[in-house]
Length: 261
Length: 266
Image (cartoon, rainbow over all chains, first blue to last red; front, side, top):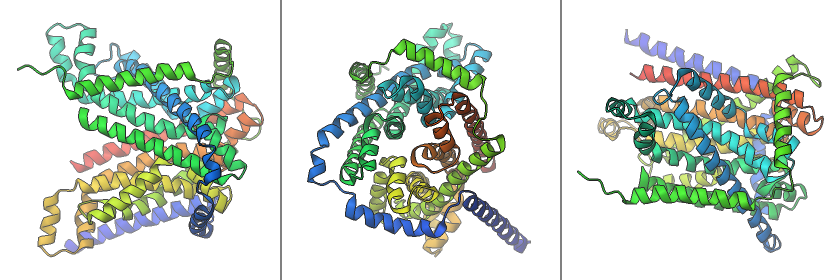
């Protein structure tokens, strides 16, 4: 009997590997991915980066310019996340099965959030570019819509984690809907929510770079400008500045998480 | 029992919220609005959105071509996820503190933190200099970021493996690889699969964006052309529908897989 089990396991594993292999092969053909070039390009890229991709003294003169763009991008990310979170909180309260005041409205708000979440920020930015042009609005709204969709799902999960027991207990004492929300639901899930907001700010700074490249604003525009004019020294400085900013934000949010969670 | 109302956590929560609000207000005040008339542009956006979603049509390509382009994007995301998962599985073992020594783990985690903090699009563009714009640069660049993300997720899952189980196997004379394959991987498999699926979902969205921003092909590139070159809002709407349907399908599959895993575990 024991042999059978091992044989079955082996066959199971083998069929899984075969399936995966076929799928990979299919994807390689479909996307015209050149496997040999894929392997050779990694050392080539590293070699190129070591000899060209570092900031030199000339690019340091552009630092104030780059820094100004970075501050703009960080502020847009924070503003979009904070305002997105405020709206997401409303939708999460309406959409969570624990706190919804009406089944139908709950379903509606969950659906709206799903649609916003699944239209990527890059797509939003291209739609918004039509009417808002290269202004700060384009990046702000693209990040706002994306953050709103994502945070609604995250907040619903945070609220559901708190559980119905405290809500039920308060309801039994005759507390009204708003006092349940403000006295029980929000206080007990606020630290989870802040953790999600901080995560979203980090993500948004990275996405803002992409949106900047697509729409010509902020730090992403600075990168693509230097990149396209082959000024790789300045471009590398942009990358380092972004990395530094993300490290600082990660450090701050880790501190906050350690204290509140 | 009386809980102290002004403890550290309370102060930090309120401090964080207050500074977020202040930064937001300052941000709104300092943004470069480029003299865009907000009301006019908003109305125009609403009209555009209405036209996009209510009257979508194809003009530069057909339904079959759109499906083919989505398949390319899915292919890019799939390749990236498989490559990323394979590399991350291997390196994740070495990054888990309970399976290797502290120095190796610290080095891998440091490098990975750096890789993760560089936006994916920058990785793709950096690789594009060496490999040229196209699927190679896109897959390699996206793989870089996936590896960074998955190593973090995997190694954290490995670190939560019950220490007693590893010790028991060690005591019975099992070698390091045996411990990995008989204890660590089987007991974390559910986490690994759900993290990998989550990454596949993210990679689909990233692949769309890379098509638009880094010429990686697929539906994202078509979208970039439709909006940036043809100014054809209705076609953008059609493409958005395509992306939306596939993204929601992926999300449903991911939720289903996670549920199955949870019930299989119990």
